Length: 170
Ligand SMILES: CC(C)(COP(=O)(O)OP(=O)(O)OC[C@H]1O[C@@H](n2cnc3c(N)ncnc32)[C@H](O)[C@@H]1OP(=O)(O)O)[C@@H](O)C(=O)NCCC(=O)NCCS
Image 1: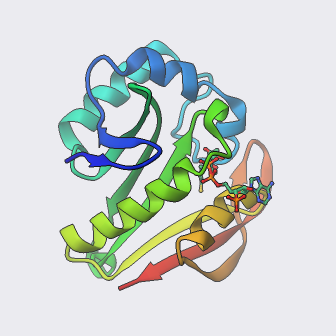
Image 2: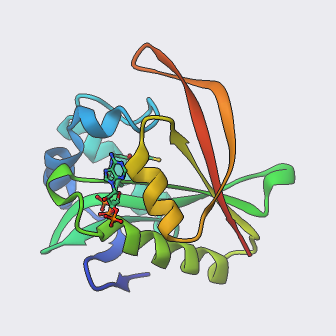
């Protein structure tokens, strides 16, 4: 699976991506907005583990965001289970030097379309930490609706915060 977009290419993670992954993922400003299983600091062994896992097991749902031949971010969908089996959760991050160019706005549009057309799902959702206005904005620009504010739902970096639930349904 490869999606050629105007501002980036989305393709599976592959061996060789590790150095650019470390370069762009090792950033506290990214870590503050994602879950704690995203490492900080982000080391070469973290990158090796991720590329191995993603290229083997997630190749049809999680993609490197490639700009100028370099993997500079990630975007993907995680299939939910049990009664949530018709839902997928969307997640993404981008290297800071590429922020503000519309790259993730475009990528969310493509991945959402891909998700609805390739999997037996009716809902794609994303959790946004209350301080992450940029992420809320990229979802809104793609037609995701603000559904709920989950009060005190997370603890990140020692700070308890609310979560904004955004979703798009088919
Ligand atoms: C959130 C993130 C993915 C956005 O990626 P991006 O490619 O820079 O996003 P885009 O350029 O497509 O769009 C960003 C939009 O947010 C807006 N924005 C940026 N900072 C903002 C802020 N503090 N408040 C409100 N809007 C903001 C930009 O103006 C832009 O909107 P516009 O095109 O209408 O002007 C990126 O900043 C990132 O990786 N952040 C850290 C990790 C993260 O937050 N992951 C998501 C977890 S839910």
